[in-house]
Image 1 (cartoon, helix red, strand yellow):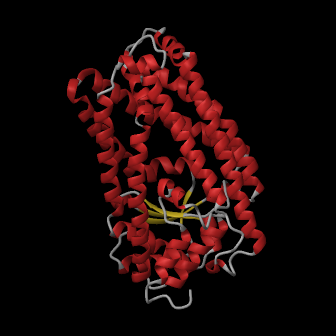
Image 2: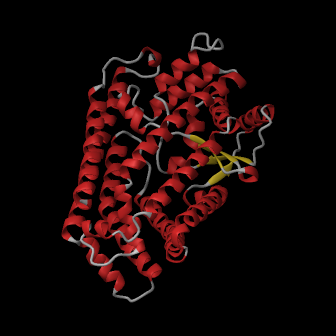
Length: 414
């Protein structure tokens, strides 16, 4: 029964994703939205649609290969072979679990790296985005692996230990422990983890820095620092974000963003980000994530060492560490429902932050211009299918955001 349930979940999830991507391609239109006249010419707009098609085709091939790989692992008993190899060292369950998960992680990485290479050095290069050198690409992979082994190893060890010694309330202590650890990472990420991948340089543009600081002061919003990120080392795409909490809170601007936008546009983008803080969006989303984790660990506790579940994966012996992995397959539909809810809340927050920006900075034309430039520079899809938005988008489509802003009296001829 578990085999049939898992097969149904995997295949139906794959088919749903396939249908969504095909529908998203089918709604492509050659007619440029009136809002983007003067920003896109016909050739570049066609280029953005070709970029969407190439990425969609790539995504479908990637998901097909991954599904085939998972099915192969299930029916050939590879999970069991890896488990028996991990057990052959005769270590305690925590160490055995780390070996088991590490091997599976490395296998998936080996499968995934060729796709990453193709996406970075072929697709992104074809459309003029890629600036990643092979050296940077390899360094990013190795850094990511090291962080995964350290952070993931700590979390996995703690979860296994809790389920070994805490009995029926293990799920609760896992929930508390993971929540505390994730909050710790949120505080230290801006000053410890992010600089491993990017160089954060204090903003040297005095006029821009002063304008940002003036606006932040007007909103009683304290900043630890305003930094420029060397994002152009990897891509020409643009972005900006806030990160950290309290005294670790900092503004991060891509150097590509600074290059392509006016000071007023940049401050309007930062006003949007400040709006998220002022509206407590980050705290609300953290609360949602914490509640979601609690639900996940409780349901997980019901499937620890479940014989039927292990039989579905052709396993000879049960274990806590393998239970965590196999449970993930059963959790896919629950996670999808929760992510739809989370994405809906996130899109609502984006509208609220947009309106906060135009109501406080009072430069709606500049903000709309910034949104348009970001979309053009990143070759974003201007008209995604509603089902794609419903299932996957954390931000509303740019046209929806622009039209929402234009409803307000501040906007004249944007």
